Every structure is written in structure tokens, then in C-alpha cells.
Length: 296
Image (tube, rainbow, N blue to C red; front, top):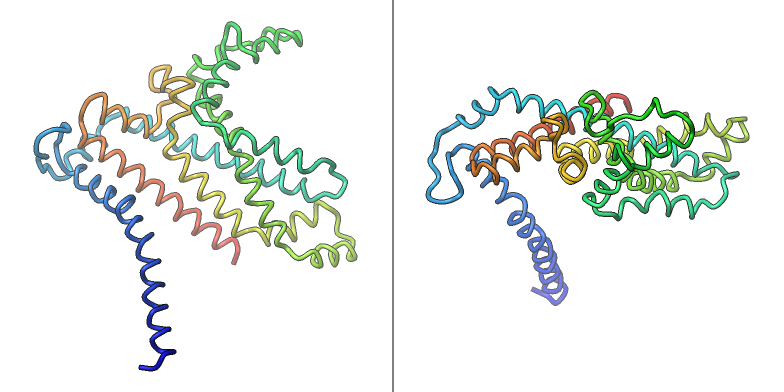
């Protein structure tokens, strides 16, 4: 073996070693806990002692519960609304940022992105103060503009509370997807837009027929991240309503926490956690399928 072969052999060893380190970390942090959760979901366990294997009884009990279907409906509703709100508004803002007449673009980006760095629990308590029926900013604003008839108990009315709690979530993460989409737009060659302007394309036509198709993959990633992330929403709801009134705003993540730590039923809690994962994967696969077909 000559010196060059030895050097290449050492480089391969270093490459495999460097790849192995994050792979082992991923297995320890993600794969192993996932497999443990799947195992516990098939057992009856109170957190102490030895788990008792009971098969799919936890899933059967969970599926027979009306509360499970209610919180699943709440979670899916929030996932759909937040995905449309966050990614849709972020896409519109990203398009507006491409207009040459818009001034102070750096300032607008900073202001819109600022809520992303805030803790979700803080955002929840801030909006809880805004929604407060007695001294909240929203009702005070409605009184100031002379429309007291519009005043509502925003977090106590079961007919509107789920839509109201989605607004803080949408507001917080618009900036994240705006940055992703703006990065994708900035990667589009300027020659494409210049040719379109020569052909008489306006700003709106350029956004629809040029920008949107060329950022389609980034848009798909944003939708998958948003839809999957909202499936495990927890902090905002705890701060705003704690799942109330009743279970009107309770999510699957809150339902999982309730069974696991409040009732001490780790088996059913693990079954709910696995269900959240399966739903998130199904939604991601559906989005991938639909948007893949649209691109073709």
C-alpha cells in the first residue's frame, strides 16, 4: 500500500467516524425513545414496577373515548388553520418584499421575525391579556372605536375560542416561514425577472407565474413543517385556556400529558404520543403527494 492509498484510507476512516457521531446521537435521542414509547403503548404501566404487556388494549380504549375524537378534531382544525394562516401570510409578505417600491425592507423583516424568538408560553400569556374580557386590549379597543356590541368573551365562548387561540400561533411563526420563502426567492436568478419585465409582466404576474413555481419545493417544506409542528401544539393552549372551556381547546399533546402525568397512565399516554406521530406522518405524506402531483 503506497502513501496515497494510506492517506485515502485514513480519510475514509475520519469520514465514517464523523458521520457515525451524529448518527449515534440521532439514534439515542430520537430512535430509541420512539421505540420505547411504542413498547410502552402496548403495556399497562403506572411509571413504577414492571410494565405488563396488554397488546393493543390501550389503543382500543383510546379509540372508544369520545374525548379522544374531540381533541383530535381540535388538533386537526388548528393544524389546518395555522398552516393556511402562517404559510399563506408568509408567502404574501415574501412576495411583497420583492417589490422595488417597498421601503425599509430590513426593518419590516426584523419586526415580523421578532415573535419567532419569543417563548410560546410568553406569547400565550400576552395574548391572554389581550383577550381578557374585563381589561383586555381587544375589548378596550372596541369600546374606544364605539362598537361595544362587538365585545365578546373571547376565551370563554366555545363557538369561537378555537379560532381565537389559533391567532397567536399564526402571529408568532409567520416570520419563520417568511424567511424560508424569502431565501428561496432570493435564489431565483434576476435574469428571469428581467426577461419577464421585458415581456410586459407586472409584479403580480411575476409572483404567480414565475416566483411561485420556482419556490414550490420550499413552499412544500414550509407546509409540511407547519402542519406537522402544529400537531404537537401545547404551550400556547396551556397559557391561553388550559384546554378550556371544557375540552374545547384541548389538543392531543395536552391529552397525552393528562393521561401520562396527571392520571399516571403511561401506557395510554404513550399510545396517544404514537398516534400523534402517525397522524403527523400521514399529513406530511398527503401534502407530499398532493404538492408533488401539482408540480408535475
